[in-house]
Structure formats: structure tokens, C-alpha cells
Length: 271
Image (tube, rainbow, N blue to C red; front, side, top):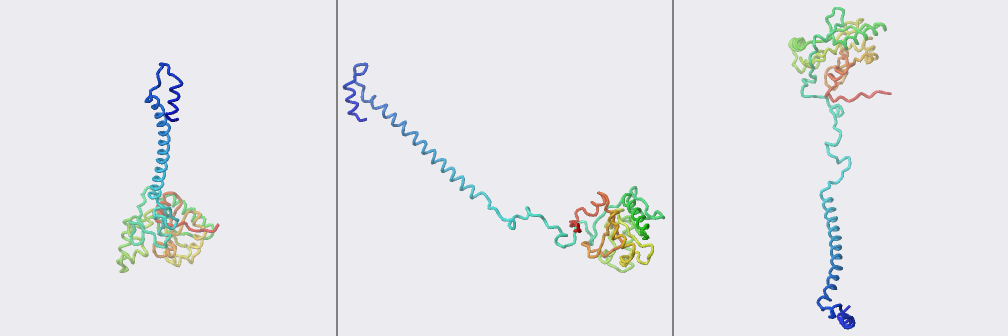
């Protein structure tokens, strides 16, 4: 509506005061209405633009900061399964190893029980009981299992290791292939035993013990009594083959003694 329209209205319709509405007052409401109608539109447009800008900036930052995904072959070493020494084919080792032999604590005297008729050869109670059960089972099958050596103190092992080494003109490395250094013999634990065949004593502590009936019986039945051969041929520790040397692994303490931190891989057996 232009000024002409307002002029006609002012001429035809008198105000309550009898005077025409001043032009300034007449124009002011129209101007305010115009401003009110424009301002919300501007605010709405500005708001939309702001939201769009925020979304764009956020998307850009997400793209820049977020690391790219990688496939399994590119994953970091920390997220992958470590390869143990036995899996890689290398001998298991630890910081306490000496010439391929692990460190072992000496069994307390109070936990030792005799397994020989003269009571001189002893093992830890649980191991001794199972050995006697195993020997009785073998005897019923016509096989005589003779205990040749059981628990040995660190002092005894020191004498055996160094004196025999000197007698045979062997270096410690050479001697370690057939006898553990003191503090590193399985005999310290009270869980290990050297076994002979009562029918063929000439094979005692000799590799041809594996030709005897005692050895064949042990191979078939020892696991039933929780005994296993410590040093089979080509063992991971690099110790010489000892078919006469067996160890008890039938309770938690013995199992942890021989298997903890040695990175040994479970044996595969047929179902």
C-alpha cells in the first residue's frame, strides 16, 4: 500500500480526535512489520548455513584424525599372537638357563619318601606313591622297574658334575650334555627318577635301555601313572637322549615346575 492510499483514508475517515493520523506514526508500524518479517528469515538462513558449515568441518576433521583400517597382514605386532620359541623350532630358553638346563629348587627333606628297599632313593610323596604303584603294575606284567636315582641335593649334583667332568677331561659344556649343572637338575625337585630294567642291569643309565622290556612297558603305560620321559631324542633343550630318565607330572606343583615359562607347545595326539 502506497502513500496515496493512506491519504484517501485520512480524508474519508476521521480519527477519534478529529485529526488525521500523522504520517510519521502511520509509516512506523509498516516499517516495523517489514523488519519483523525479514529478520526471522535471515536468522533461519544463517542457522542453516551454520549447521552445514559445522557438519562439513566435523566431517573433515573425522576424516583427517581417524586412522585408516588395515587388514590382518598389516596389523600391529602388539595385536597379533606372539610366536613361542617352540613354535619357531628354536630351543626353549629363559634367563636362568645354563647350557640348556633349567633352574630348579631343591625339594624339602620333609616332603621326601623312599621308593627303594634300602630307603636311600627318595622322591616327593605324590611322586613316590605313583612310582610304587607303577612298579607294582609292571611287576604284575613280568617287568621289573628298578629305581636307580631319585632326589639329589644341589651339593650332591655339584660333586657329580665337577668331579666326573675333571675325571673325564670334559669342559662344562661337554659335561652338560650328559649331566645337569648344580642347581639345574630335575633330580633336585624330587619328581625325577632314573629307571633300570631288573632283568638287564647292563643297560642301566645307557641309551640301549630303550631295547629293554622295562622301557617298552614304560612307553606304553607310564602316562597312566603321570610319568613322562624328560629327554627324548632331539629334545628342545639339546640334552643328550636319556631313555632311563623319567619325571612325575601328576599334580599342580610338578606340572608348574616343569612346564611354566618354557614355551612348550601341546603335543598332538590322535583322537
